Length: 427
Image 1 (tube, rainbow, N blue to C red):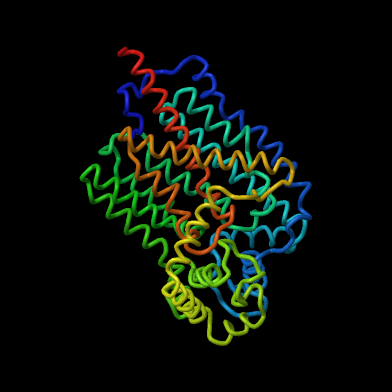
Image 2 (image 1 turned 90 degrees about the vertical axis):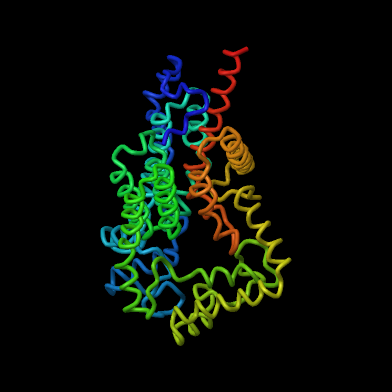
């Protein structure tokens, strides 16, 4: 599906400068590599806590089971992403637990995910034959102004967001690759299924995006068999994890178990849109011993159901407050007051993030008005933040869509440039 169809000259070569930048665009990753390496090796004393995911990884390493993400031992869990748990367990096994060396390794791994995302963005620009304005916009936002690089390497290294951003970008690339829809449809369907199914072990939203991609491609090509095969493969990829959860937790959870808890900690009287201990009910078992004891007593599945019932009771009784909170959370995700990361130039980083969000929404409108495919952007840029608009917001939750958002901006800029050139030709 070639997104460049607005002027009928998608395959036309760009300027020499554009071709030069396109050919050597990967060199723009070098400053990211140098700066990211500096962060990795000099900030390992920051963010020492393993967090919930790291705690489960240590349990997997020491006890052989994914368990105990909370303040006290509570048994097997599906609270955290199993794929990320596995990656952290490998680093802990190589470097004797939660040591400085392990944290450096995790930072280097997060840096590799970021650079992989940049590489996929550049690959997207090459595949779509974006002209100079769109290509420069993509490089500016990912390499020249890498506002999320510090937080990715230092604060988010033990979470699933860095790898989720890479996987969402890979799924977008497979979805939008400029090939005829009838050319090797099974290859594309299987690639999307593998990214979505296996990626579901890292980010619960990926199987949903992949299913949307399969159905979208099937509808456009009227070739439904590859779409059905891909959708089935997505489901089958999640079955082993669901079987494990059925055996250990008594419920065949396909992804993660914690949505009810996150819904409860984000929706209550006094909620502000973000999760802070001040003013929040004492219900999160990672922060409160009583909550952890309650979870250990009744089991994780029952506790999460209890929290979901608590949240839905408050939402039903306070629909107006819930709506206002959701608007606040959306604003905080796209237009944060502070940007997690290096305290240097924090105001400038905030301006870049705000400008990126404004460009993203603007270019989404441009893509729609120019009748280019819009569903991939809705699915890869907006859908992943949907759960956090309902629960609680932080910049870490918005980051997985960053590379896809950059591609949307580059596509919109390129479409505007082509439209302007077409008008000048016909003038």
